[in-house]
Amino acid sequence: QLQASGGGLVQAGGSLRLSCAASGSIFSVGTMGWYRQAAGAQRELVAEIAQGGSTNYADPVKGRFTISRDNAKRTVYLQMNALKPEDTAVYYCTAQVRLSWASAHRAYWGQGTQVTVSS
Image (cartoon, rainbow, N blue to C red; front, side, top):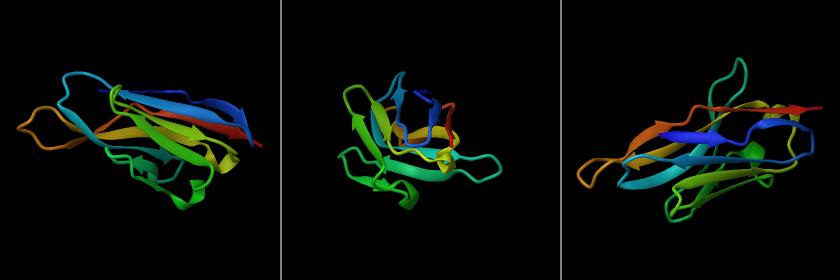
């Protein structure tokens, strides 16, 4: 299970920090990431981070957002700075989770958290 938190309403130029923790009987957590879905749009990748720490960002957020993770806590974070109205969306966390040594990684999704940036 993935539990996301940290969304809210912020003015343009402001900052928010999202968190997402994986819980339950888990053997390992691979790549973790954040996607977002604006009203009427498709879900899109925001950023992802591998277990070893390598990162990948969507072009619209490069230089403004920072993804990080705490492997001991099985938690991924998204620090969002210099927010713009076009960042308004529901943000979903995702993680590749292995439930046992014998199982493959499988994608799990959090419930989504609303981020609204006012102009």
